[in-house]
Amino acid sequence: MSGFFAVALLLAAPLLLAAAGELLLERAGSIQIGLEGTMLIGAFTAFAAARSGAGPHAALLAAAGAGLLAGAAFAAFAVAGRADPILVGTAWNLVAAGGTAFSYRLLAGETGSILEVKALPSFVFGLPAAALAAFLVPAVLEVFLARTRPGLALVAAGENPLALEATGGSVVAVRTAASVAAGALGASGGALLVLTVSPTFVEGVTAGRGFLALALVVFARWKPLRLVPGALLVGGATALQYRLQAGGGTGIPYAVFLALPGLLALFALAAARGRGGAPKALGTPAP
Amino acid sequence: MKQESATRRIVVAAIALSAAAAALVGLALLAGASPIDALRALAEGSVGSRAALGETLARATALVLTAIAASVAFRAGVLNIGLEGQFLAGAVAAAAVGPLLSGAPFAARACLLAASTLAGALWVLPAAYLEARRGVPEVLSTILLNLIAAAAVSGLVRGALQDPKGDYPQSRALPDAVRLAPLVSGSRATAAIVAALALALLVTLVLEATPLGLKLRVTGLAPTAARAIGLPGARLRLLAFSASGALAGLAGGLEVLAVTGRLYDPFSAGAGYTGIAAALLGGSHPLAAAASATLFAALGAGSSAMQRDTGVPGALATIVPGVLVLAVLAARARLTQKGA
Image 1 (cartoon, rainbow over the protein chains, first blue to last red):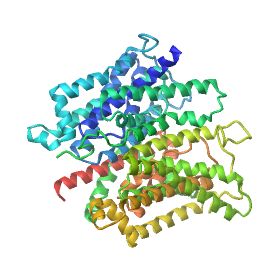
Image 2: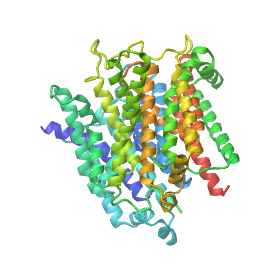
Image 3: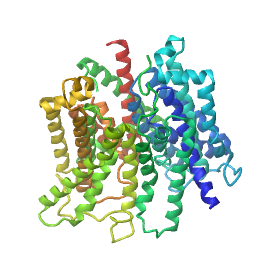
Image 4: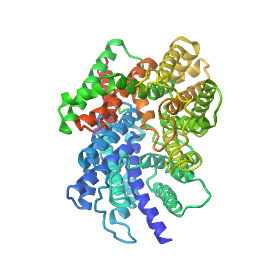
């Protein structure tokens, strides 16, 4: 059974990183529903870096770097440019899905064979250090948001942007910084998939995890520590799905297992009663 | 979705088309191909021959319908990001009902499409319920319903709907008599594209020239004002939401009936998401959205030929619509800030 828990933790870690980044951005008042795309960018960057000879840790760093740039690009449109973030996010997913598929084909050529990369080494219980570190991120965010000056400015940008501007802060600057951090975290989450779960890249490798992470933020009611149980629940459901799939003959239709993480997230949203706890200025343009 | 002046729309379109052209040229160069050769292959593969044009029109059917579907929802202020899931629900219904049908092809087709349309509309209901009763934003719930629909397709073609003849993850084929035959031999285009374009016209008429359309547009543009003049906002939103789902479901049904003949996994190459991009590019006007969808279909058809002839990856057809939408959003936001 310890194997099951290790797999559940391993599957929860990418979700947790991505959701933590998204939570930070949403607390600042913006929203990136193209998180799936950002995770794909991270996954591909890690793969490309590892294929060109970087070690797994360097590949993870490269993905985080690509995520910083992705976050800055998103902010250029949706924060500084003041375009509707929901629409930017939708287009973002198309560009990221197409862009990573395009780049993968250029890198891998016509071969149909699977190109493997070196996975992150195990630290304890078969889990790499980076996956374990993911579980510390919510605690760090909790302290950052409640106890530090930049954290308070970030919360102000999401709750009362005009007040932040009145006290000399810049909503655009704060939200851009949050977007950059969210990009790095989301891309690292995507990279973890390639560097732990399955050490290769395939088109759409993130398989909807970015969308599940979006739902997790609502389920956690925008409180960082509450991301952990949600991520473990979805990670556990996915681990269960793998296990039962391999076992077979349960009498429960295969489709139900595949749909389990999505169904869980949908029920979690219903249970969280929608917008309760959402930042007041969520999704509104900077003043 | 805000209305904008004609001049502004032309400026925005010019900026967006330049961005798309730049992306095309840049991506071709990145792939080590001559941009001229890539563009020629793209044009030949999309409109260069009867077969190519047929391929474009065959691909356009689903995209035109999802683009209209997105337009209806957006105009009423409903952010239906779940067209992909509703499209899949329609395709599943077609694959489930289709092989059972016998008798007159016309009646069989009508049954199949009715089932698809209904399935698409029903797939909206969980999101509509969660929005109305629990305050869950439809953006999130529809995205999750997309994931659930994709998982259901993947499971069903290996389970309840799997073709007993053969081990492939695909459903039974529709009877040949039921499937739509090509309009012209040597081309994949069927009467479905005509039906899709007629629907685009019909939806435009309803939205622009009927009291119901006016009510829907007011609900989308000014929800508070709509409430003040006594419009049933929740009911109008639900109507637009389910009409949008029904159109996307119909798209899924027609895809099975006219193009694939069966369901398999993965079934959709992002028809729902590309439809949203087409609607955004067309300013949520059904006819403009249908035109954008046809353009994206041509891009999709041409990119297969381009990949074959010049080695530029066909995924370009997914990137360019995204770039177009980003450019439109950025240009509009910039012009609004300038107060134009």
